[in-house]
Image (cartoon, rainbow, N blue to C red; front, top):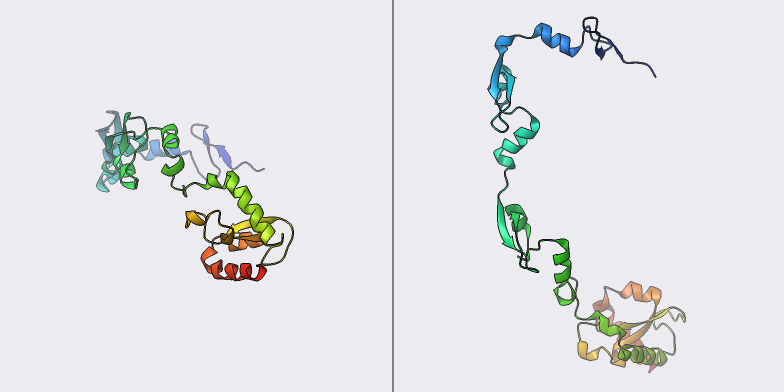
Length: 212
């Protein structure tokens, strides 16, 4: 791989091969002290020099980028004290975080958030899906498959059978274990109708009436 650098003829430092001297020597040679003004950084108090052209452009207020970020008024974010909804501990949050909080509840840690967001407090809670695992579900499922003679009522497959609620599980709780509210579907058909239950309701009741 070719070397793109050569040594400065003045200080013997590394410079670009197309330059006549290194940048340090160039600045020392061309430097005009009258064009620089000494200032004191308002953040850290360090003294530094700034070219007058930078001052004319409104620059050169801080000695470094980090001080400029800390001293810029646009970077200042006010914190407000809030109380954790779970454990009651007081802590501070930025106003921007509070504005984005839709629920109005604040949590001091991920553990507090997780301990609160369980069961009915979770945004995805749908009213008790764990009820599918009770003994009534197994009896209901067996009765629906027996009524449909062990075949998918849509494609007549006999393997990978599921039992689907025609009226969705949470829409009509009093019909959850009603055999007339169930239909046997294979895995692929069940996947296809999930999310489109309202569209398939009448069709499923017609399919059931044919097998009675």
